[in-house]
Amino acid sequence: MTGRRPRRAPPPATGVLDWSDRSHWARVQAPCKHCGAPTFLRNDDGLPADKVCAERALTERSARTTAAYQNQQL
Ligand SMILES: [Zn+2]
Image (cartoon, rainbow, N blue to C red; front, side, top):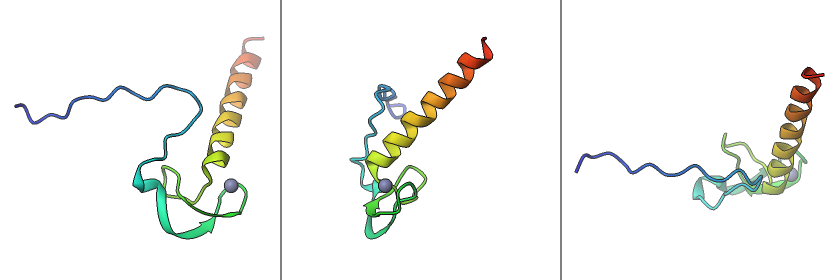
């Protein structure tokens, strides 16, 4: 045994976040950083965020980035 952990394949880029890990759940509600509604969920940075709001923000950011790159090519 080498003591090294086996490498996991990166998740597919589907736009759907996997927040099944317990690190994404908190015991107390806090306002979502996107919409302000109370949520038990936390994003990867530990900030309160609804999963659907985080997925929407990720999709919008990706679309803005794609548009910016496309505009540079004109
Ligand atoms: Zn929200």
